[in-house]
Image (cartoon, rainbow, N blue to C red):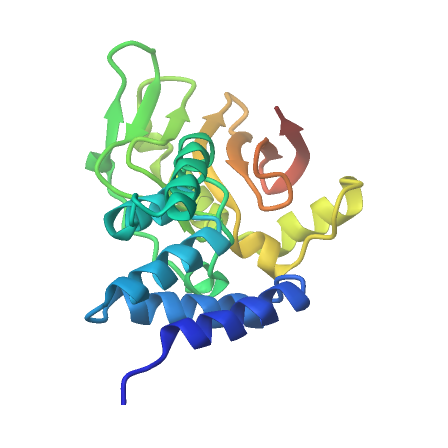
Length: 244
């Protein structure tokens, strides 16, 4: 017997709203969405898929699906598509409610070697990791988004220290949560906050003293329209500031 996606969506969306977007209700909506994405869908199923995308904050995806099945001779659907198009332009898929289960999966740090560090042609003693996705805060970062600055060009003398530090950055969950809750008079950070952090860029500076200064630009779900700038000295977090 085929699943009645419309009925299920109505029930799950009610649960989502009544529970104030509880983790359980979000996971149920994602399970519905994943099944829809892989099903042989009818037009009605695609309408449900569009509605589910929209409810989870994927406004661009919701619009892209809806415009393929909308009946533009129907005034109500034509109006809805215009509203969805405007929201797709302004929000895109940038402010989604995340499926924490995917973010919580432990990411494996790639093995780093000397050849992975590429010297900058423009900036003296600057190196980038060009060909591997480095794990920072258990997030896979984009290639070339991790930069290392050294006192001199002889990176081989600092290689072990750099790799050890990057490995520490891969999962310093307790330190981040504790600092946020002790120093930032905002919401209360927990494992869900950590799991859904975004990491956009990482700068690691090793000074002549061999102390390490690290600056990370990222974002969180508390203030999705702001950057979260994090500064770390050695293994001590010294600052978290929302920017924007």
